[in-house]
Amino acid sequence: MNTSALTPNAWEAAYLRFESPDQETRKFVRRLSRFGASRWPRDAQIVELFCGRGNGLRALANLGFTRVEGIDLSAALARQYSGPGRVIIGDCRHLPFENESRDVLIVQGGLHHLPTLPGDLETTLGEARRVLKRGGLFCAVEPWLTPFLSLVHWVCENQLARRLLPKIDALATMIEHERETYDQWLAQPQEILATFGRFFQRERTHVRMGKLIFVGHKFFN
Ligand SMILES: C[S@@+](CC[C@H](N)C(=O)[O-])C[C@H]1O[C@@H](n2cnc3c(N)ncnc32)[C@H](O)[C@@H]1O
Image (cartoon, protein in one colour):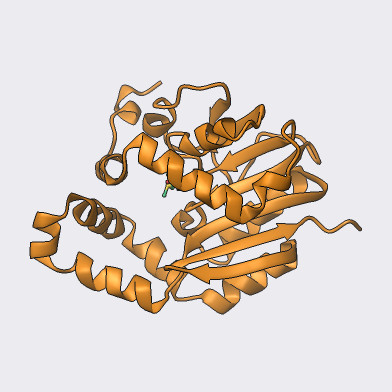
């Protein structure tokens, strides 16, 4: 492997300092409860797409799930994972899993990194649908342009806030480095919801604190 791929780039370095692994794992545990994870069988086969350094897998393990995997493009982030699950380095637009082989797929803040909309979103959701068993669950949480998120953006533009608040500086740095795909994502809410609805039977959508939560099933027919 190219060793430079193991050194975090500017976005990855900001992501790593945004939250500690424990903070992130606790956040993911809260999100999993919003997805309805308390009702999922503990031996469900679960994959976290765009899993970063794998704290979503840790959250799942903390809740008692025993068959967890993750996939992320970044070797520098994936190598930080240590735990009972398996993390694969790969592109979520081409999932290395067999058809109808998994019960639950989760995305936490990955789809807004896709370079083209709707093309890459359709490809990724198509892959997710292919891999899910019939009736399998697709859960996503992604940034959503609410008044709260606009306020966060405003704070991120304030140099004093960035100097005083390391978390704001890390977030502002991440946004700067993902600007193109982030802005593209935030500008197309109706198209994105319509695309989710074409691939999955919507169970629930919820917008809260600058995030969209989507939970849907793979159609049975
Ligand atoms: C905001 S992080 C999400 C990590 C974690 N789920 C979280 O919520 O903090 C976005 C992740 O998407 C990964 N990524 C971007 N494009 C990808 C792709 N096409 N396939 C797989 N991972 C990708 C990046 O390496 C990064 O780890």
